[in-house]
Length: 340
Image (cartoon, rainbow, N blue to C red; front, top):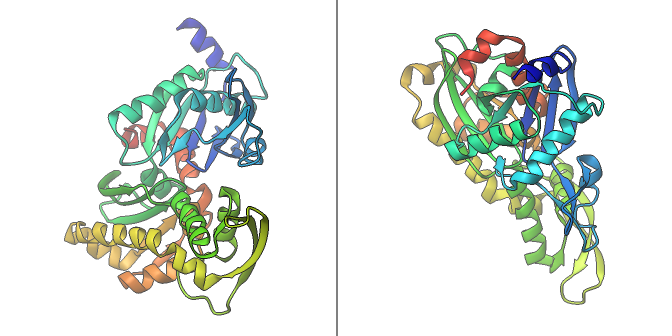
C-alpha cells in the first residue's frame, strides 16, 4: 500500500476508452496520448506478446501458423482476459515512456449493458496490469460529457454511441441514465455483413481489413447523390485463385441493411420508453451521434427520416467517449456522481 502511493507520485492518472476496435488514452493534463487498434499478436505456443496496437493490426489475416493476431475485446467486453491484461499493461507503459514502476489511477469507459462479472473482469485486468485504483464509467455517459451535453440539468439528452462491438443509446438527465439500451450490433457486424454479402454474391472471400476498408470508403446507410465504386481483391472460392472485382455503394448499402435496421430499431425502442417530459426535450434538442460507427455515410440522414428528429453528429465522434472519460478524470466530483 505504501509503495503503491509512492509509485503513484511518479504515475500520471489516465482515462481509457477500452474499445472493441480501438483503445484511446488521455493522460491527465496532456490530452489524448494514445490511439491504437485493440489488437494483440501473440506466439501460439509460448503465449509471448509479439506486437500490440497498429503493429499487430497490420498482421491480421497475414500471420504464419505460430503467430496469432487477436482482438481481446469482443462486443465491448473482454473476450480473452490474459491478452487484454497484456494489452492494457503495454499501453500504460507506452504512455509512461516504458517505465515499469508506474501505478496510475485510471477511469475506464465500459458499455452500459455490462454485467457484474464483466465489470469485475475489466477491473481485475486493469489491477493486474499494474493500476493503483480503477473507476468505471458507462460509455453513453462518457460520450455525453465528451460532446458537451448539459448532463447535470433536469432535461432530457439523448445520445447514440456506435462503436466497434456495441451500439448504445441512452437518455440522460440529472447526471444519471434514465433509460439505456445496449445491443451488440455495431461496426464489427457491419464488416461481417459486407464480407458475407461479397462471399454469397460473388463467391469471393475477403478479409476483415478489406471489409472494413469497403465500409469506410463506399459504405452508406442512405442513397448517395453520386454512385461510388471500389475495386476489391480476394480469393475466388470456386478456383482458389486471387481475383479482383469492382463493387458499388448500392450493393454495400444492401449488405448493411440488416445491422443498420437493428441500430434504427434500438433508437425507436429508446424513444418509445422515454418518459414524456424528457421526450419533449429530445424533440427540441434532437439526438447526438458519437462513436466511430456514426461516421457511416448517410446514417444521420436515415435516422432523421425514420424519427423526424434533429440528428447532430458529434464534432469528433471517435474521441467523444475518451474525452468525456478524461473530463471525469479531471473533475473528482463529476467522477463520483457518474462512476458505477
